[in-house]
Image 1 (cartoon, one colour):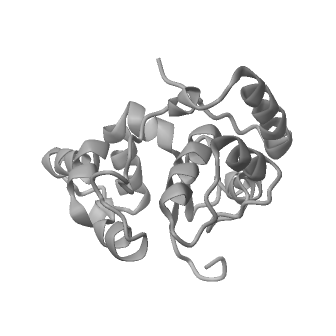
Image 2 (image 1 turned 135 degrees about the horizontal axis):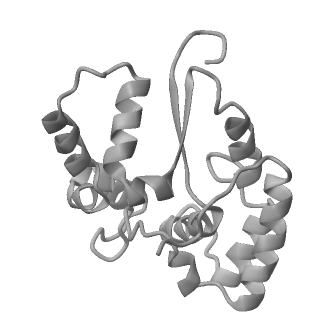
Length: 183
């Protein structure tokens, strides 16, 4: 991928919401050992839980450092929630699709909203939930809430403080700043 002139759109989400999302995926995955929230958070923070992307910091920071490469577009999930239209325009420009009309952009925005994706069985990954997890989609959705700041419903004050210390180590002096809640 780094040897050929391919374009990569890399979307990152703040790690507090990531851990909550991963937790919900794991509690319904029949191939994962069932976790309690406290256990899962500890495993996530100690890098013992490897998602398909690996530990958050070791995956995100190298991409962040490549954000100025002409073939890399680094986008934050939180920015997509704040202004999806702006992000779609940015992606279209990055992919040299500047010929798109405003109507086409707005149609794309509508199709890419969280609520629209949650209604679409393909985006919702119903086949995964039904066939792999052997679970009821209405009770255990693959696409759950998608909001920024949902972590506050799970973290205790002590857990948040511990997480912040690990997060600071992950980002180091990279200059990456994530938003953990929106106003």
